[in-house]
Each structure stands twice: as structure tokens, then as C-alpha cells.
Length: 228
Image 1 (cartoon, rainbow, N blue to C red):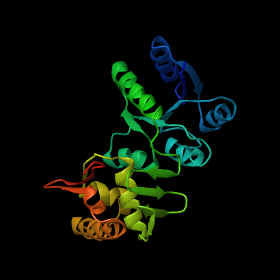
Image 2 (spheres, rainbow, N blue to C red; image 1 turned 180 degrees about the horizontal axis):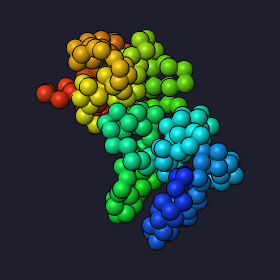
Image 3 (cartoon, one colour; image 1 turned 45 degrees about the horizontal axis):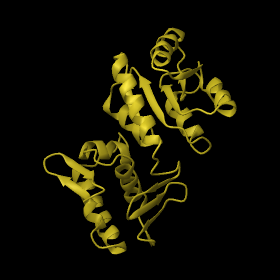
Image 4 (spheres, one colour; image 1 turned 90 degrees about the vertical axis):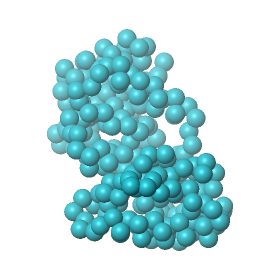
């Protein structure tokens, strides 16, 4: 039986989600704060964390970053925030998914099943992303292409990490600006284009053709295709 920890400061929401999950056969634990959630994580094996963003004392985003180095547990954010930049922030932190309240119970269960199924065939650890050609180490901020170390700038590294974390996802230039440069950045889409160009060149130096995994989606932006 898979264990899901529901972290939400609203007790009624905790209870409602618990009913949904228990009816599907999951073992459910609950916490009302980041502090309570961390206590549970130190004592129990948790297969998935459903984490509310808007909590007192420590919000969900901060908590996710806090536990990332110590607990290798997939996270789905639950929040009333539907702004694009908030969703991108959650995904950039490393969450598997982001669900906006109110949500349909069947949608929640479906997304949970996808994340848990993906976790049974992990492609990466909490600090490393491994593909056929690339190893990206978030802790050391190093990238190897076919076992050759490739020197990337900070922005190039963050771009690649964003693509590898969410393969096949199409990012608009504005999304990449918000995610990598920050929402207050005054640059344009040309900034993204220039960095993508140099990133492709550096990846190709490690192994010719690897840079072409970053595909241009004309009129929209870019995506990373593992099997390009």
C-alpha cells in the first residue's frame, strides 16, 4: 500500500482529500504545517507528498526546497494560485505536478497514479538527471555529455535543467525568461534565443547532435526531445 502525505493547513481540505485517497486504497498521513510534515518524513516512509503552497510560517515552495537535499519524495503542489509564474516556480523547484484548487477528485487521483507509476521506474536521483547522452548534477552544477565535462554558464545550466526536468514540455520564451532569469527580468525573447544557441553549440561539442535535442517549436518556443 502506497503512503501519501497530505500537507494543508485547512483541516477540511485534509479530510476531503483523505477520503478520496483512502477510497482508492492509499495509506494517508496528514500534516497542517511544514514543521509537522518534516516530523512525519523523519518517522515514516512516504511515497508521495501532496503539498499546499499557501501555508503559515513556511510556504510550500520554501518547504519543498528545504527538504529536497534530504528526502527523495515526489511532490504534487496543491494551491489556489493559478498564475503561470507560480506554476513554473513549482515545476522548477522539482515538483512532479501542480494542481489548482478547486479540483476534481478523479483528476487528482489520475495525476497521483501517473506520478507514482513514474516513481517505480526512476530515471534520476534527487540531485542528478540522467538521460541517454547527458548527466546533469544539480548539487555540483556540472554537466557531462558522453562522459565529457561541458562548461556551461549559470543561465545555460538552468535552461538545460529546466528542459531535462520537463522533457517534451513546450516552453514559450516568456516562460523561460520567468523561470531562468526571473519575473522582473527586462530582457526579451532574443535573450532566450541567444542562450539556446550557445547551449546547443556547447552540447554538440560534447557529442555532435546532442544539442539538437533542444527543438524549436516555431511560433511558440522550445522543448527537449529525448529521442530526437
